[in-house]
Length: 446
Ligand SMILES: *Cc1c(COP(=O)(O)O)cnc(C)c1O
Image (cartoon, rainbow, N blue to C red; front, side, top):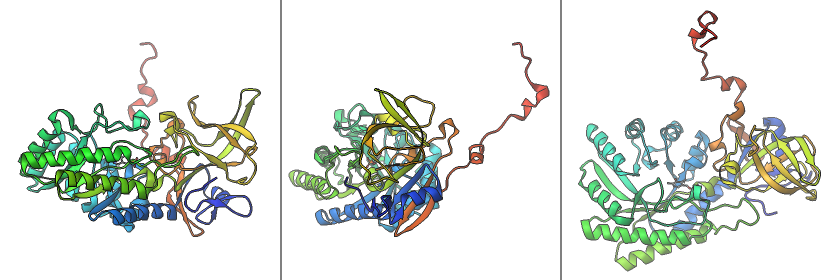
């Protein structure tokens, strides 16, 4: 099996990552455990930088931090010279707490509250990616109140359907996100933005979907966006400086996934921008890409300990683990598929079919259906590959399961970046109304 980053097998038949033995890590930090391969993430960041630098003059790479948001990942992304996407006040707050430079932050979201807009304005966030006319008016008013000017991009929906699960398609006409290119909606909002003195329209944005395997749809989107930039120039005289083409490049979850490599993906979209600009006689804009999944997904490993094993003769064998949909809702949410290894038997032949079940009280809490693994017994460790994106970020406390610990590993060294939740953490926000003291209990008969 082809393993990403520094993930490999060691001499004792254990899985290792960042030169740390995964069996040891599970013993030290407990399970479920999320492990990030630091080198793996940094390599991906550099792949994007190199590919863009090789193909295009003026570019930016942003990390779409909803894939995995934490103080440590924000620090790492800043060290790698990336800008940042945030989609909520909470992500913004975390980025600011990590001292991420606010001028390199892009604030996304289809329903930013006034509080969130104010937080971002106070912090000096670099760019607002305005999703709709309501937000544009709110932002203009708040900026006027502060006697300041804000830079915005408009999020447009280019009307492109990509081949991915419909829950993660975002660029089609029927989407909750953005302003439609079709029917003149986008041009009307552009004109409104240009008329607002507190608003500086620097560019346009689109994000067509996630886990997209080829650059084809992106090239198509780039063409449509440049065509629109040409129309804006013709109708208003305004030359837009930035073209943000979103994120969405797929990663390898199972053997059948064959995503285009970063280098050819970037070459594809930058060529499309150059071609379209030549066609419409436009100067080249700054190209912005904002990958999330492809930066952190394959560098993440989720490690679980096996407990109960239930064999239903002639039907299937369930192996239950100590996590599941509470720390990874993706299989339940959109039938996500994974490959996995037994971390303490990494070299053993895969001779039995299992279904890996989570421990939540839902029949749909199945992490992996029908996977061939070495024969397993209670206490074995299941390592699920490509667990770095949209897993811990989506984790909940369903069934009052404490959220797992998250660690990074590199050069034989492991560091906690998010500590495991405790039972007492689960009670942090709970309260029994004092008026429910026994003497005040409502009469039993209503
Ligand atoms: C989610 C998102 C991204 C990142 O998508 P990935 O598939 O994780 O690369 C980029 N831009 C926007 C606006 C997003 O919502």
